Length: 216
Ligand SMILES: O=P(O)(O)OC[C@H]1O[C@H](OP(=O)(O)OP(=O)(O)O)[C@H](O)[C@@H]1O
Ligand SMILES: O=c1cc[nH]c(=O)[nH]1
Ligand SMILES: [Mg+2]
Image (tube, rainbow, N blue to C red; front, side):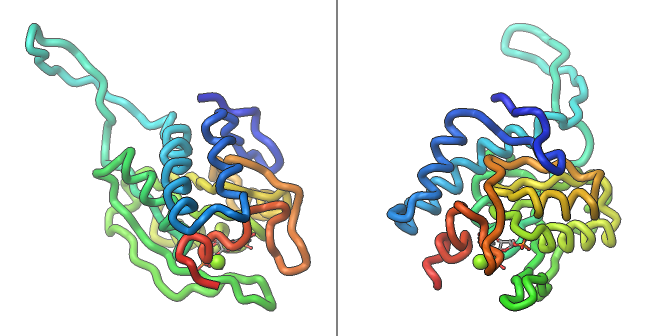
C-alpha cells in the first residue's frame, strides 16, 4: 500500500486503488445504508493497515513444526482504538477486524449546528491508555474541532502516542488539527475541496453518522 507525501496539514493520503474505489462507493448518493456500513468497514480495515505501519516489533523465539526460530511479534501493550461517537463506530468495526485484541475507548461528541463546535456527552477510556498506542477514528474531519477536542481529552488522560484516522478531510480542518496537535499524524483516504456554509464537506459523502445508522 502506498501513501502520497503528506498533504495540507501533514495528512497522509492513502492512495491505494482499493481505498479510492471504496471511497467512491461511500460517496455515491444511491449507496444504501447496508452498503455504506459494509464498505465503511472494508475501507477502515485498509486504513488501519496503513496507520499501524510503524508499530514496534520485538523478536521472540518460537518453534515451527520443523525447528526453532527468532520471529517478530508486536512489542509492548496492545493498541487502543478510540471511536468518536457516533460515526466513529463505522470505522471501529473494520479496525477490530484487523486487530481484534485492541482495547477500545469511546468519546461521544456532536457538533452544535449553529456554532459548529463539539459538545461532549460521553467519555470512557481504558485506565492504562498512557501505555498504549492510540488510534482515534472518525470518518469526517470537517472544521477539525471535534478531532482536536477528542485528542485534547486523550492527552488529559495521559495518552502520548496518538494518531488519527478519517475517511475524508478538508484543508481547513487539517490546519486546525495540526495547529492544536502537531504531534498527531493524520491518515485519510481523501482531502476534499472545503466546507460549505453549514460546515459540511464538499463534495464529501453527506452526514456519515446518518448514512451509517439510517437517521436524518
Ligand atoms: O470537524 P468537525 O467540524 O468537528 O466535524 C466532524 C464531526 O462531525 C460528525 O459528527 P456529528 O456531529 O455529525 O455526530 P454523529 O457522529 O453523532 O453524527 C463527524 O463524525 C465528526 O465527529
Ligand atoms: O460533511 C460532513 C461534515 C461533518 N460530519 C459529517 O458527517 N459530514
Ligand atoms: Mg453526524
